[in-house]
Amino acid sequence: MSYKFPVPTQGTHTRPFWEGAKAGKLMLPRCQDCNRVHWYPRFICPHCHSTNLEWIQGSGEGTVHTYAVQHMAFGPWAEEVPYVTAYIDLKEGDRMLTVLRGVDPSKPEEIRIGAHVKVEFEPANDDMHLPFWRVVEG
View 1 (cartoon, helix red, strand yellow):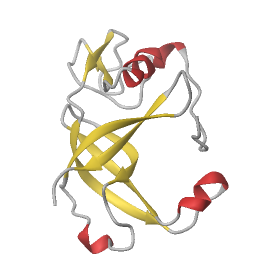
View 2 (tube, rainbow, N blue to C red; view 1 turned 45 degrees about the vertical axis):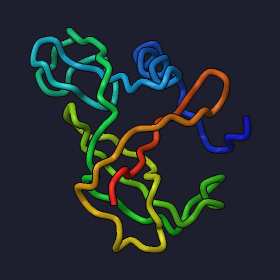
View 3 (spheres, one colour; view 1 turned 90 degrees about the vertical axis):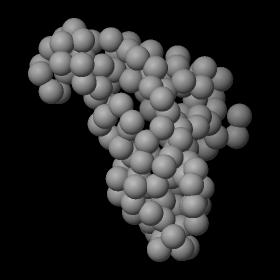
């Protein structure tokens, strides 16, 4: 593997997400009491405080909520500047922070709030694939 960026630590409460990512599926936690999806994974629903949670397979679709062009970074990401980070409004609800693919960071005027995006997974090592989002429309 040639992935050189920091990799999150896996925990028991995030295992379904990482197993799904490795299989190319976006797995999301959903509360069985209020039926709301939440991101990031945690032991309690941030909306109704229930612990009655399940994992569902998400659509892997969303829209760009907002973005920023990163011109400074530290560690391995310093070699990648400029790059675009974005908050993605998931089709199922809630938001996910990502490095946005399929955009030119030198032309931020071409990045559109509301642009349709799809998730893609990149292998970081033998056990972990990381989600990134790619703009799929002009």
